[in-house]
Length: 283
Image (cartoon, rainbow, N blue to C red):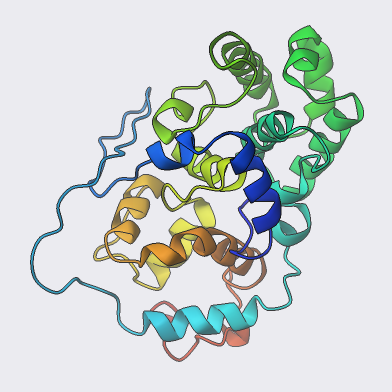
């Protein structure tokens, strides 16, 4: 799974991408404060803020201390996401519009796929000259052979071709500059859209919640009540987490989930939060 880098890590590249796209996208991107309806067949994402109710906001116990300890555990920046995440997948010397397209493609490939596999697939694509036109000219069989063995590669061939055609026809070969438009593209979900806004447009539109962020925030009880889906988790987190932390939190927790807070048999004995983690106390 690919993730955005820390606030300082990929900042220069992100600013380069964002400036070239004119600030329209950055200013128009909005986020959600209310849970969207979820459909098995479709996807939806609420992107409008609602007025905040009066009174003190709920926040989880010990969250600031937990966050600081996770930062300490992530100080080495040596998780797969740090070496092969989305910010390492695109060609930083390419024109900004091409870079943004490569960011979006790497996000599409990363779904249900390890960073190592995504990175290798992106390298093979880039060796052939990864642009909107090169993908449109490539036949489906060849594209499938290049991106294999990313997860659900057959579906991704279809989505990549469909999305690339839309980008060519509707956006002049660039990618959309709002979450609302991004999630309308085939194969692009809310997590990818928020990461694309962050990396490609240098705009924080919302928290990108993948399986790691979803799992860890539930274990830490950073949500008022347990959530079943990543979109529920995103809405719950955005309700209380200070906005200046939204850019960092995905990169931080993805790496933490890859190295310490594993899906199965988490390494609680190695975790600095062992004494203040609700999940660790039950182990």
